[in-house]
Image (cartoon, rainbow, N blue to C red; front, side, top):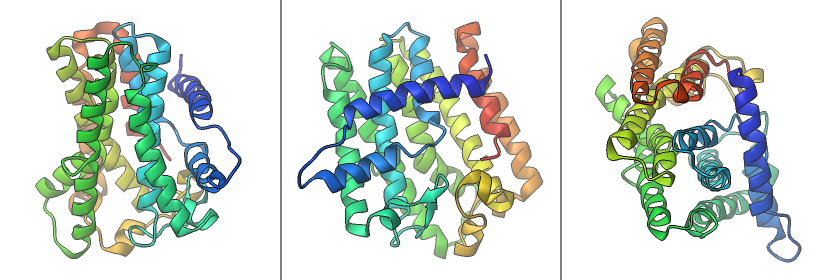
Length: 294
């Protein structure tokens, strides 16, 4: 199976789950629900849900449990995009090839939609339908909260904003991106191990894979921002340079950044040796991340 087909199948399954978890409603709250659906159902590669589903397959986790965890991760990821696009942050007009939520609705609705998606992600994980074992659900909630908070994505976003007015070296930019992007990717991989009661060394192998994959993903993202095609990426090109942000490309240059992404991809796949051929879908993802054009 190709990575494109595998991604499409995982995305379709997660989209069905998101649609079930977040159905349209009538009444006063309709506008915010519509904005939440707009944010989550507007395309995207669904890389994080793919990682949840395929890490869960390593431990023969029930598919419905994996899909609910995958949907929760995507809700949280989409919340971060909604808030990231706001005028106070990146001030973006385009996301995934269409208007951002605050442009389609308004800023206040976008803030509330992001808040709603963030909180609903934890509601889904805490629901017994996600796993019958309360300890597993608690572990999922704790791990995602840590990955998304000040010690993870939010902390990385704060450093990213400060970086507009500071000069960062390669160590600082690596830490920034590990927090901002890598911790949610790490949770996406570790979630399968949590759902499957995996041994600690297997959970650590998935986290190590994810950390290298996450850095490679961000380097490629920086490359696409520098030289990509807005029609393909669905967002403006050159935004980081225009904002004066430090990136892997601004520090390493294009060629060294490409070489570093390839090295990280090789390292990521090395962490999967413990799983044998069963981890091939994760290896496909590594290749996809390194070679993607959008």
